[in-house]
Amino acid sequence: MDDREVCIVFNLISGIGHARFSALCSKFGSPSDILNISYNRLLQVPGVGEILAGKITNWQQNIDLSKELNLAQKAGVKIITICDADYPAQLKEIPDPPLCLYVRGELNCSLNNSIAVVGSRRITGYGREMTEFLVSGLAYTGWTVVSGLAYGIDAAAHQTAVNANGTTIAVLGGGLARLHPQDHAVLARNIIEKGGGVVSEFPMELSPTRKTFPMRNRIISGLCSGVLVVEAGLKSGSLITANFALEQGRLVFAVPGRANSPQSKGCNKLIKDGAVLVENVDDILNEFEFLPGISNKKSEFSTASKKDIQSILANLSPDEYKVAKCVELEEKNVDIVSAETEIPIEKILVILLKLEMKKIIVQLPGKRYKIKY
Image (cartoon, rainbow, N blue to C red):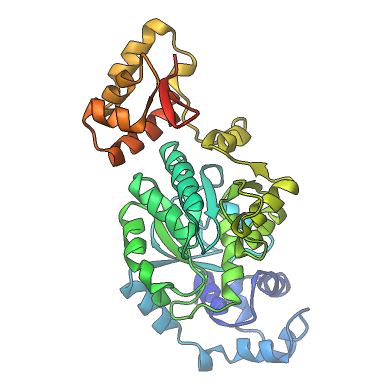
C-alpha cells in the first residue's frame, strides 16, 4: 500500500486529523510505515490513546478501502491526498489542512486568484443584490469564487458566478455521495459544467452534521486569499469562516448593512473589528493590487488618451458598444438605456456591470450611468 492510499485510510478513521497524522509520521517515518507499527508502539505517540491505536492496528476490520475507491471512481470523483503533488499549496499553509480532498470537476483555484464569498442562509433582497453585484465583478476580473453551496448567500454567489461564466468552487460539509442540500444538485452540476468543482474532505457517504459544517469552513477560507462576508447575523457560521481566515493570515472583507437589521449585525461587527468595508469590487481589488501573482484586470481607460478611446470602444461587443455610446453624451438610467438601445433590461444590467468593471462607464447617484471620459 502506498502513501496516498494510507492517507485515504487515515481519512476514513475518525479521530485522525493533520496533527495526529504528522505526529505519527514524525515518529515512524512515511505514512505507509505506520500501518505496520504495533499497538504498544502506537501508544507512545502523544495524542494516540488506546481507542485510536486499536482503530489503526485493526483498520481492515472496519474500513473497506476498495469500496471507497470504487464509489469515488463511479461518481467521477478524484481523491487528492496531502501526499500528492497537485494538493493545493495554499491549504498546506493552514494549521489543520485536510488529509484528503474529494473533487468532482476541477479544483481551479490558487491563493492569489481565489476569494471566498459567504453569508447568511436567510438572505434578504439587499444581500442578494450585493452578492450578484460583487460576484459578477469578481468573476469578470478573473477571480475564482469559493463558497459552501448552502442556502442564501452561498447559493447566490455560486449561481452568479455561473451566470457570469466565471469559475466557482463549492466546499461541502459532507461526502460527495451525500450532497447537501439536495435542492442544489442542479447548481452543483452547473458549477462543474462551467469548469469549477465540488469539493469535500469527508468520505463519500458521510452525512453532514453540525460538527462537519464548521470543519469545512476552514477549507473555504484556506483555499483563498480573502473572505468576503456579504450578510451575516451575530451567530452566523460565516463569522466562523472569517475567524478561520484571520487565523490563516487571510484578509477579511465585509459589506455594511442597516444598523437595525439582524442580518447585518455580523458584518457591521466585523467592520468595527477591522475588516475591510466593501461597497464595490474595487474595494476588494485595491487590497491585492501590489501582491505578486494577483490577477486583476486593469482598464485601458486608465492610461488611454482621448484619441485612443474610440478605438477602445470599437473593440467592445456590439451590444457593449451600443450601451457605451448611449451614455456618452449624457447620464441615463437603466430604463432609458434599454429603450434607446432596444436591449432587454436584464441584459442591460449585465452589460452595464461589465462596462463598469472595465472602468469605461461610471455609476452616478440615482443609478444613472455615464461614460467615464
